[in-house]
Length: 177
Image (cartoon, rainbow, N blue to C red):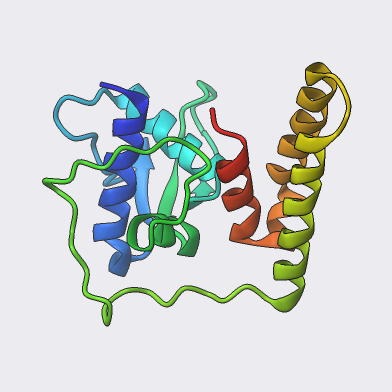
């Protein structure tokens, strides 16, 4: 099964069970097993990837066995909810099984946090930087290098803290793949 489908299944599960708070995964007691057709390793890799891209909150448990086993508690966060409900661009490919997708009325949807004025100004400034790079009178290699640095910046924890979901949205919009 494709990684994007496994991530989609996991994100959908956390969305459907968001009222339960954090849910155990991995070697934790009463851990959520992978659905049929998904192996345990792929399931846990999806947990790690969704956490890395800030779509879920992950609280790891220390491995007492010394074998490097992944365990912890996960829950969908506001950004993950926005990706599912509002169509906000995900920084990592996610495929949702539409037959399982829960339809949510506008009144039930989680409110989308408005960007602060500072975040809006910074996002607009970064859009201008991206446009300037694309229009610069330099080689394609130099443009590629500049964009690579910008992509790295937008993926950093600092950018996420400063720009909020805008960092992931900008990266997804301008840096496909």
